[in-house]
Amino acid sequence: MADEVILLDALLSPFGMRIRIALAEKGVKYEYKEENLLEKSPLLLKMNPVHKKIPVLIHNGKPICESLVIVQYIDEVWKGTSPLLPPDPYLRAQARFWADFIDKKIYDCGRRTCMSKGEEKEVAKKELIETLKVLEGELGEKPYFGGEKFGYVDLSLIPFHTWFYSYETFGNFSTEAEWPKLSAWAKRCLQKESVSNSLADIQQKVYHYFVQKRKMSGIE
Ligand code: GS8
Image: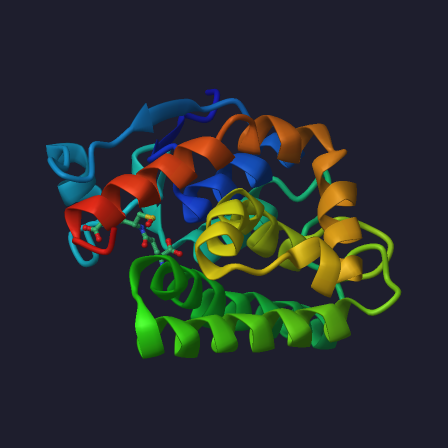
């Protein structure tokens, strides 16, 4: 029997993009279901009763939640093509460490940079800039975070490329000017079809999302 794979997702979600890229890398066909996060479907509430968040991967009726957990699951189930985590346990631990670092820092600092003002915004922006500095150092001269091939850490970070235009615009900084290695890395990732197809046309939509949210919160 063929696998039944369903992805509960929301187009602008960087966490959902991770799953779209992973499934594309593996060549797995799936049914995409867009969730309205203001009115969550009974299916989402049933499949992720703890966090009630997307993305959720439903594989043959069984749910897997949390994007980094889902990506690791995908890598284990469809292990024949495009391995995402390295086979060596130490290198796997390193990859997980950096993905966790990205998770703890980027989304939250980026959101605060876009959605606050004054001192609060400056603190968030400083933290975001520090984070990028650390990531630029970790990438170093390597083409990808794990070395020669696109892998787990790249996949964890590249979705945020679609959010960076907003972070840069509202935070008044330029990734290209400050972090040339990260910029070149992002361009390299975007040359991959699995990445460019998964991120296409999203950047402007994220920007408009923040413009609306800022208006609604009275920041503008
Ligand atoms: C984060 C998912 C998340 O924040 C992961 O999967 O890695 N740690 C999780 N999902 C958001 C949409 S992306 O901004 C979500 O589902 N929000 C709905 C809500 O909070 O009610």
